[in-house]
Image (cartoon, rainbow, N blue to C red; front, top):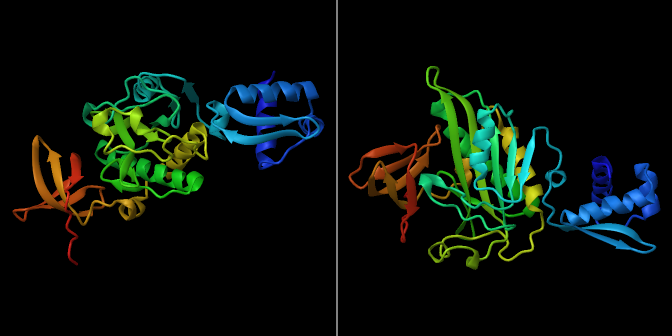
Length: 323
């Protein structure tokens, strides 16, 4: 069965917005036999689409969680989709080093060795999250790489708002929160030309918990980790959400001009925080996000610092900054 028939059937059923279309009408519309329609429908069902077929009524697309390249939607760069990977970032970095073009997507249904910042393990239970890495080739100096992390956070927020109708908050620099719990982490890794200081490639890794439940995580993570739809179902497939996140991030290239939106979504400024950076830990008051995406903090001794990396956690009794 030609992949084009399957794609055309998916497009026709999606356009019907949940209404039934007869096999005869679909065959005529697609220019194929009814047997070809039936075969294409079976292939879509095998990929995870919730596709209903009823005598004298025809076919109806009722959602589901298809995990396939077709479900990503229109996409102009290569897509590498795996049921299981050790790490999507690891695979994407290999592809980047081999010359993969800008926008190349690596999408995994499960990660067995997913990583977060500072070498931490990122829990990636099978079939319950979006585990996505994008190869980017921005024309940026290495010193401005953080603009991509900022933009990736905004891209996830925009995609989740568009497809799920949910508003996420950002904890500087790269964690996204919903209902007070972390639902998404971003790990940005890059390769640069040391002589010019320019980025040669950059990999933006995004792990978004979609339907994970507390029992899917180690006990120590359960108080802080969350997901958008614990236990499911989600109103959107993992692949479709990954596609929208990728398109949103690529739309921000090459300018990455979304700092105002990042600031509006970041809930850290205005609170007392604990800062862990450079091997030390200290209390400070988070003041603002500057034009380079750095977090401006005021230490208890009154000294102001601009953090370009590190980790912050909001203290149990945050204080609002008095205007």
